[in-house]
Image (cartoon, rainbow, N blue to C red; front, side, top):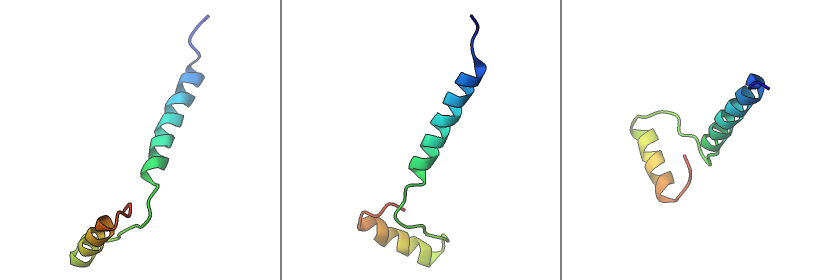
Length: 51
């Protein structure tokens, strides 16, 4: 009875995609890191929005 590599690989891929989906769960996306983007991100964070 050997190790089934496909089962292990599927588990690794599922764990990675689950983490990715959690990271992608946002309320607003701020594009740009200039003065306007940083100001927008600051106000959004103060209002507890996930950016």
